[in-house]
Length: 135
Image (cartoon, rainbow, N blue to C red; front, side):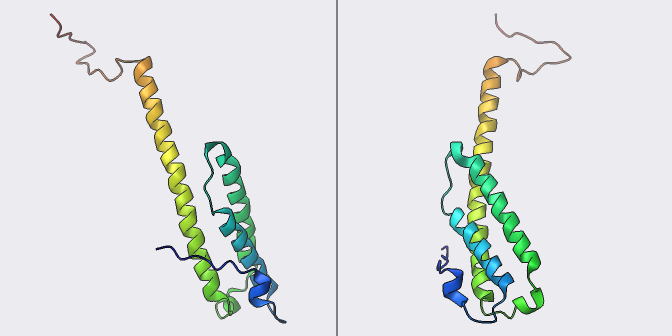
């Protein structure tokens, strides 16, 4: 069963003096990605959807690189961010499965079309000869 992220805004969660700006940026980038992954679009909108995922992942990567990992693991929001990360990974897997399914369907359609354009491609030959068994 999939756990859902509470969806609280970063300022509502931890707007206190002395909070690390990097953690705020990482949380904000993670929330943007999480909310973007709520639905998987149809074929027509999929390209823009994936481009936006790539943009958000790049933004999130920059925020991760800016984090001080030694102090981050002891941060108050560490567990919440780990949970959010796991939910993002689950949703990314669903998107990947949808794309893989579309690729598989496309390959199957290609094979089906090629069987109509060249019906004898799958015919086995022996030494370059074809034996017709019709009488």
